[in-house]
Length: 278
Image (cartoon, rainbow, N blue to C red; front, side, top):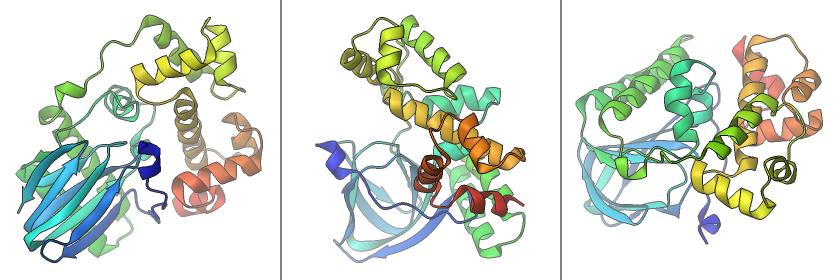
């Protein structure tokens, strides 16, 4: 079962929009075991080579190649005969999603599993932005998180412009499921369940859940969760409402449940997250 391979450890992003890690693996060593996660990861090979498997496709990444790990895709890697040195940047797409037209057009399809990038590219511009991100991490200045966030958008823009794998574009979302999505987007702040949604749109519940996931790429529950946590993050940044008010405004049944959900997503409490924005 694919769910048994889901990575359980939470990534601590601290006060940064992404995580940067450096790795060196000796010859023929295991870089990482097979697993999957919801975030995006980019591996930049600095020296040597690594043998990668992504979604059952095997390939070799060499110096200056960039490996793209799409969300929810199984992947594993082993170092080549002479070892490998590489950098990893990882980030949650939900942190880069808001209500702007550009994000709705480009980030939401990624969140909904309707767009996939090629697993390996060789692009000097992406390499440049990863180097910029690495430099900002070494600076640790007050404006670093702003620069890093901008560089991530630049990388995503290059990937969208040049490296979308058309095999994974889903264009056949039915009108009825579009109506469901519109309803959820307008009412995620209210109590919602798969049973109530299925009944409202005249589906049998289990069939509705299967159909929604087959067309959108994620379950109705996960889609609602993403919308609520995004709105909560936005309100923590832009409003003076207290935690209980934000929990209610975003459809959480209680402030304690909201705090648990937020901490699970961002590895920090809502209160601490708000303080870090000041």
